[in-house]
Image 1 (cartoon, helix red, strand yellow):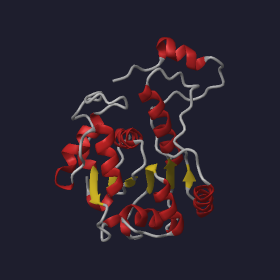
Image 2 (cartoon, one colour):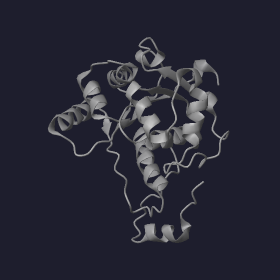
Image 3 (cartoon, one colour):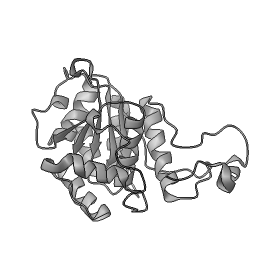
Length: 233
């Protein structure tokens, strides 16, 4: 890809539980032919290790990313085939690199998705703390009036976090709780994860086929569950 024409989506992964959501969003963006700039917080590395049993290393980020994208939401190591997604469309930035491209408003990003977003990340972005690249990139996205989707993953939500989420909504962000729906006829944990990822991509305006959309037909989800739903990879 010609870097002079490259306009990526920044994907931030914070330390909240829910790394399968991040993997599903990344797969959706790459399948749609989008470029991605990836930022993984220090806390997210610990969550990745806890939820997948595998590290995410700066020096080996491409191999670690390939393993993450191949892993199913149920933990199956190779639920998705390797070598299908174009990882050359991904640029990785360490979270401590505050001189990275996404830290500047002049960097030509399309917008940003934070998936999942922890309450600490939500607070940092709402208050404009910019304590790491993830928070700085989100602040830049807001000030440049680009789309920012914040997939908060926490329950229950305390008053302080709710106030921070309202502040983000007032600033123009889309607050998208990681709350799967069941009308699409989910029969597997991956379907529930893909629903949330698909809604995040909807909010960003990126086309995808991650979930069955409501078409005004009662019982359509049950029909899918009986055999019309696309099979899991």
